[in-house]
Length: 395
Image (cartoon, rainbow, N blue to C red; front, side, top):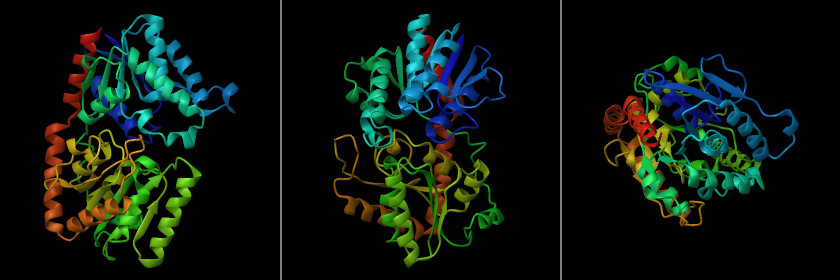
């Protein structure tokens, strides 16, 4: 069976969890002799067999970002001729999958990594393009042969956002982690080169500067941590100038009152992220919207205790009191996920972090439990097997 996987992100152009998911899933699928797995991805040419790349159309260079995306989707749909099934990831590639299904009469499987109705702040970034992306997602999901939700919470969100979808067509297949690649690796000299003292406690944040990742809320919580705790922000790719300015102001204010605030804005290679996680006392995930959260799995695989918001699919990954701490949150139901009481959430997040960093031995034990959970429950081989079973059920 030939399966064509469609994605905006694919190595070396990865900036979020969906891209990590696609890369690892494709690698696992390509180990199976019963499949021919092709990839169609946005971006510059890639030197990889069975992988096609599609740049933006020059004619649309000045167009709204959503229109540029649809232009690429048309080319991808043309490239899918001859496939038996298309599997798209995120709204960026959903339109290509939907068109391919119509053109070639093949099933379209959609993976739900996030949902446009639950990301209304995207209107800040895309303007009218947000209405286009929302239409693309709704149309593609409702017509898909199957929808894969990366968590049970995401399945609930899919059915709430698109109630016309038959629940029998929405299946849970979790994200995964390669625990051979992601493993604790001490590299104190490299950690120092990155500006972090490996002999001091540290809390690491890894993520894009977006509303959903909750970075401004986390920075407010940092003010309540002991001064000896370093804060390592691996944070870049801001959605808008406004949130970038907000984060800059919060970081500047923290630096006026404490040292040990390290902000790394560029995308780090995996080995550097692993070195920082291995050195860290805790990993912070203050997301207000997170379908599952691959970053938490990456931290757990590196034996790092995780403190995260109890929202979305995160409680399906992080076990409160065992692999880290879950911070309760009451959220607005308008799609923003905004905390109803931001001050209380910030205080609770700070308290959870303080509890972990105050007891390094317990933090280390949580980290070891987290790695074992990542190995036992989130291997890519098992995830690929469940995905192929779903493919065969709709072909």
